[in-house]
Every structure is written in C-alpha cells, then in structure tokens.
Length: 525
Image: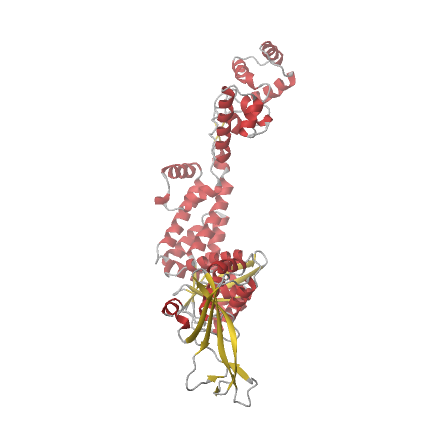
C-alpha cells in the first residue's frame, strides 16, 4: 500500500480493496471510507443530507502507471436529498480532488487531458493523449476545451489591439492584450470600430491603447475611451514609410538601368556570364561529372544511363556537353544561331570597312557557313544600327529600399558602395534616402516626437507624391504617431500572439468556430 500511496497520492483518502494487473491495464478497486457521521451536500440546492439511498460503482480513467492505463473502480454512496423543494431526489457523493459530477476521468487525468487539448486541439491531442495519459477521442477533447471556464477579464491600463484573419480576405476578428502581463484577455468577433468601442465602455479604466495604423481601431478607441492615449505602432510606421519609398524607387530605376558609351558603334560589348548557383546548378555539375567519368571508363551511353538511373537521352545530352555550364545557363535547350561562330570575324570585317552583305556572305561560305543570306542580312542590319550600350545590373526596388531603410551599421561594405552609387546617379533617390533616414532616426530613438512636425514639412515639400501621401497620413493621425515616438509601448507583443493564433488555426485546419478558437487563445500558455 505504501507504493500506491507514493505513486497515486490522490487516492490516499480512499479504502483500497484490490489492485488487479491485466493485459489491457491496471484496475484499482476502491471505496469511500466509512466514518461515524456520513453526510454530503446536494449538488443542486446545497442542502446537507445524511440519508444514504444506496451505493454504486463509478469507473474513472486515471493517469498511466508504469506505462499501463489505470482504471479506478470507485464505490460511492448515493444520498437522498432531504429538501422537498429540490428537483433532485438522489445525488452521489463526490471525492474532493478525485471526482466531479458526470466525469469519466479523475481530476488529475482530466487536468492532463485539458492541457493536451488546449495545446494541440482534437485529433493531434488524441494521438498524444493515447501515448501519455489515457485513451480519449478528439471530440471529447474538444468538449473539454469548450467546458473550460474563461479567465476573468481584468481591465488593463495599457491595452494592445490587433486583428487576425478568421478566413483570409473575408472574415476577421480582434485580439485584446494586457500589455503589462503580455497575455490575451479577450477575443472580439470582428474588427469594427463599434465592437471595440462597446468593449471599452463595458470595461472602463483603459489609459493607453496600442494599435496599428488602421482607422477602425482609432475610431473605436476615440468612441469607447476618449480620454485614453492612442499609441501608433513604430513597426507599422516604418512599414508604411518603406512602402512609400519602394514606390519612389520603382519609378526611378530607369535612371540607373543603362548608360550609353560614346564608343564606335561596331565594337562588341564585353559580356560576363555570372556563375550559376543553387541546387539545380549543383546537381547538373555533379551529374555532368558522373557521366563523363563513366564514359572515360569506356561505358556506353546505355550502360551509363543504367548506372546513373537516368534516361538514355539525358545521358547522351550530358555526354555531348563539353562543360556543365552550357547546360546550366539560360535557355540551355535552345539551339544556338548558325551564324554565332562567325560573329567575331564579321565584326572585324565591319570594322575594316567591308559592309557589302554579298561579299561577307561569300567569305563565310568559304569558311564553312551553312546558313542562308537572310540570316546574315538580319544580323548586319542590327549590327550597323545598334549602339554599344553597357548594361548595368540594377538591383531590385525592394533591395534598394532595404539599403535605405536599414541602419547604417547593419549594411555590408558592398551594400554601402552600391547605395552610394545609386544615390550619386539619381538625385531624387538621394533626397528620398535622406528623408527616410531622418524618419527612421525619429522612430528608433525614443523621445523624438517634438521633431515630427519638422520632418512632415520636409516630406510635403520634397516633390514626391508617395512621400506627400505618407506625410498626410501622419498629419491625420499625428497625436498617435507622436505618442508612438515618445511612449515606450509598441504592438510587438500583440504581433507575437497573432503568430501564435495562426499556429493554433493551422492545427485545427482553419475549421474551428470562433468559440473554440476563443477558448484556446485565452487558455494556451
């Protein structure tokens, strides 16, 4: 019995009658202890009764013991309710810490199952519970989640607000956070201003509201808590500025794309083919080396294909390729021009002053050219009229925007050089970069709200519609933006919980109703 007391302390108050070990598990026969005064309280009216009506056996699933499922066969007394006005005639006694009304699991096992259900949901929780606790179905776990009481809503002084998608593009909901404890306190069924305003009226006392740049939350906070300070999130400020800067950069990439050199028109541009990288290029090089190694051993194409488990035509293509780079480059499968081997010779003849297509055609025919005169004429037309243009590899608009928005100490040496080159070749980008760096300095250094108006004036007179639109948005939400640049609060914890909610939704395949999602969001640690 001492072993049972050590391993199953929640059964200490019972009278253990037998422990039977079976192939399917362990069965513990127990009963409530008989004391001199036997009484129990009715679960409906609460009146104590000492009249024993009878006894019956409850079968409760308990936590595993030594890898075996445990079933507690508990004999309890049934009492008669002495309150004539009570609708219940008989009721069963409950063992504190072990049983609950209508429960088929002990309190300890039910607590473990509730933790598994909240963490994993229905079907995944059922699979884990089968290994760790007791066998239970997914619907039982979902019912356990729905029966869990909601934690009491405590009105926070600093409230975080953000939305998440119940069904992306169609339905959205709102999560509310206590910014001091960084715990969710409620989930609203939509993201409208009236819903948020109603919640704030029902829970007065909110002093600061942390939100994104959305207008509905701003309006809801003004209606429900007009005295509260609204704080615009700094990350969203930088995101809005980054979008505006990217639009400007995209419109000015033509300034960086090409430069025309005043060199002779017939000089051939020097093209440097970049070295291809990535998994496809590595696999191609590896297969090319393997094919040529087997061919060097004397194996035929068919034998090489069988050895490498590839198609015969694939093996033949790799065997005919002199280098792997010819198979990796763009349009590797397209046929090269029949005139390509004679391009250097033709350019040299054009530089010597020979422009007659008939003369050039006769010369390359004598050298082995097998194409037509029309192919030569088309090439000569392009070569005579095309100026030499050095094509500059211009980074994407997103990359240039990242160089502008990123702090200087986080840029590599190459990034600094490329950004300085872009700014020197486009004065508009230089102006935009100065403005963006100025605003990011305001955001990254607290207590700089007093400089906001000066920056807005500079942006409005910069001459870029995108930045003027961003500055107009700051003016319309100036108090919240100034508070965001001054207050230490941000929506970072709220965004973290949004990611957690997305994980919960994926576990349930996005098919959970809002009430079940509400329970898991508030109960998940």
